[in-house]
Length: 337
Image (tube, rainbow, N blue to C red):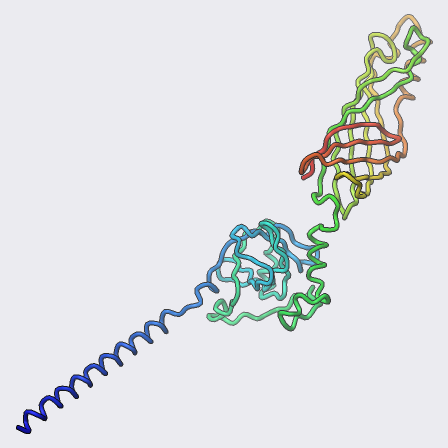
């Protein structure tokens, strides 16, 4: 009778111990699985971007954001060859598909010298310590960096000049952002021709077609070169042709105007050359030949010029252009790039 009572108790205890051992084993396996599966995958994923602009001080870069993975405040590492850490930076401005970054420190001066415009680079977001596990990399501070950043808050302190540097470098102070404007124009060239109207003389008007290229070498300061050609038939006499070539160099400054327009006062120099192969070739009238040659010789102008260029934006990238000056009165179209 006692034997029957002991056996069920023994069976219950054995079953309980078996269940506990199974539970402990399963729990231990689960903890091991979780521990082995935790990685910093996001911090080790790199993506490719391209350097578009490098500041003169090499402290501020503008790079692409084609992957749309960079945002203001992100700490990033510039990497070459998927393993060579070059520099540490912070994203200080995000606009469209471009971001402005501020270089905080340089890891390798040797690799830093390889950084150039239009170079494809690898970007590592966040923690970059895994790059240095295999070998210790000596951190070399940027010799151009005069600002000490002790914490993340310092990155947005006014004393760090981050935003101001990026705004200046990003050409935010420029009224016209691109560096170049090319244009084509049409002008009317008026000539007092003493040989016209049977030798009585009269004013004649001819067409001049010209082209210009303006380059913005500093904020709102431009240098422009213009070349125009005037083809004049029956000048100085019948059955002759005179071609005048006009060269103008101007220095301009941009001012904002209403209605999406800009005023650009300028000062410059105008040089003209003349070609008239048939002038002075009348074999029957030597006196007339002399007058024609003197007229052609006195035709070109070499002078200092002043005036104003007016640009009216039509659509993004395109302008209606007018030149009003002592050198020329012209109208045309321009495109920026």
